[in-house]
Amino acid sequence: MDQLSLYDYELPPERIASKPARHRTDARLMVIDRSSGTWEHKRVSDLPGYLSSKDALVINNTRVLRARLLGKRLQTGGQWEGLFLHLNNDGSWRMLAKTKGRIQVGEKVVVSPAHDPDSEERLILTLTDKGESGEWSAMPDRDESHIELLEQFGTMPLPPYMRKKLATDRDFRRYQTTFAERPGSVAAPTAGLHFTRELFDEIESAGVTVSHVTLHIGIGTFRPISVENLDQHVMHSEWCELTSDTASHLNQRRADGGRLIAVGTTSVRTLESATKTGTIEPFEGETDLFIRPPYQFQAVDVLMTNFHLPKSSLLVMVSAFAGRELILDAYRDAIKQKYRFYSYGDAMLIV
Image (cartoon, rainbow, N blue to C red; front, side, top):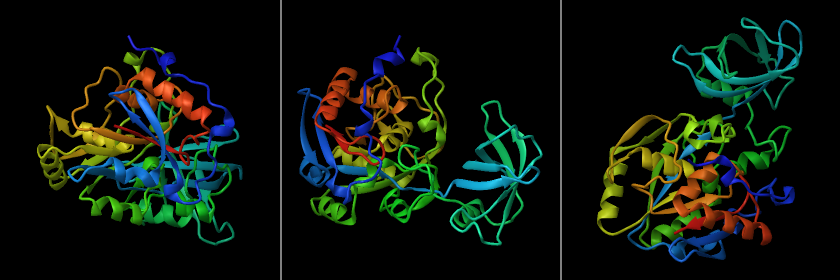
């Protein structure tokens, strides 16, 4: 029986990165060798030196929505804040919401453009239902798509340790990967934040291919595990897609002796959800795959990832890939070496 308390560590607050490195590839890269149980300290710009011409890099091309909304309750005038999670089948929005006092089903919220509150444009959301987990359903009063409405009225959601106020212009540039294409996430796939076009050019010029998958990151990624016995943890569900062309290419790369390098835990989750008995298959739909020891990886050979929260499902996943003791030892050294942690922080490459 695996216990959550085994995945804990002490992180000094000053090691949490509240802003990004000046240049994406300036971030540090801890390279961990699973076979020897050792690691070395490099930079993200050194990544091409650890790849071979037969390898395939797999990245998550999801795009962060302007999912944070600010408004007022129509009945009381009280401040209200919401976070769009996903679109329901009936066209309503699944959301998290907070306000002073108790809000009731049927209430309306008036939302102003987050970065232009003096605008005359308004969006009215009617709260139609509250689920057992505390999430709300809200029906907008306008016909535009949710992406269009969020673009007009929302702002980029950021983890509270970064910034509690509105996202800045710098955040809009940096808290989005350079290859983001498909809008749908409430958070960035943070390992991908380290990549630039120049780094991709260097990787591809060495013969390494770059394949895109999509996983739209939901709020469940950041919700803490609430049970001590990991057998009892119910993993959140997220939508992902791996196309038939991508599956064929990745299978061929592996058949030719190449490795699959997953950039980020979301790429891992997509790849492993699409892989049956060692063969990658096309996949589209929800996945609630919880990767934890003693999980046997079917698709991923190398993992690049940032440093994760104590007792998180992401730390458990990385421990399943590299071994819990090795990862926790590496984390302790990363703290000693003053690595930067979490979304805007440094990365590790596990080979």
